[in-house]
Length: 268
Image 1 (cartoon, one colour):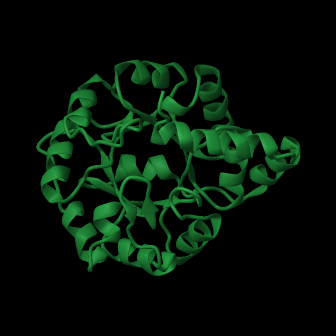
Image 2 (cartoon, rainbow, N blue to C red; image 1 turned 45 degrees about the vertical axis):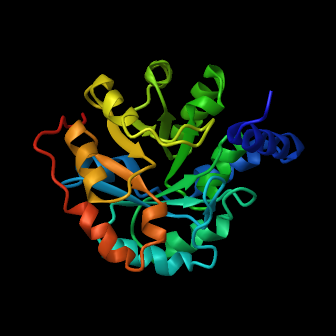
Image 3 (cartoon, rainbow, N blue to C red; image 1 turned 45 degrees about the horizontal axis):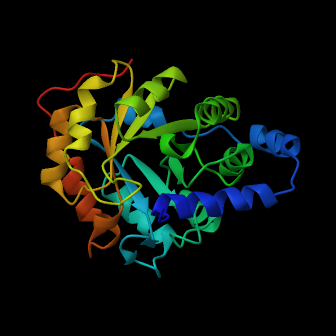
């Protein structure tokens, strides 16, 4: 069987995790000692209109180079000036060209909560996210078994992080609900083929219980896509490629933030 994008990325991250000899307990202590997080989920739950999680992203496995020479602080500042609700920063170096330094620089430049966007596979990853300054961590259901998902979701809460649980379909939504997820992202990009299915998020939105903050990820090319997702019931969209490649990211964010839905179920 030919290895997929996800197979290769996860194999690399799990190999790195297996080679990491750092004891977990000191990392847990360091993570608990970091100043209080900015409140990623709360920012999305309370936003007026459609929230926008603007992403600092240099490249992707499917599209290659996007903005490899970007200045994370400058990009983050432009996003905040445009009205972004939160930031997402890629920290995977091998496949996305990101780093912990990108996250630290972006967060220091703004007052927005920041998601560490990476492939979280073990406890050290969660601790590292908090230590580097992240306010939220990404947990991809397709990358974790149920025990891992439950343990890492609980650990995130223990060290003060919000956890964005990423799903793709109904069985993964059930898995997210089983671990108590209250912040759920539907990735419209298939992590096996990297093909975008723009109907996926619309199908999944009404299946999420009241009280869940709903985020649509990937494939948001502009206001028309964002409007459709807002109307479907999403509280926020996570947008990377179309923002980092726009010559005026501030204006691009502002156009998305102007979106209003006719009706939206509010989270509890």
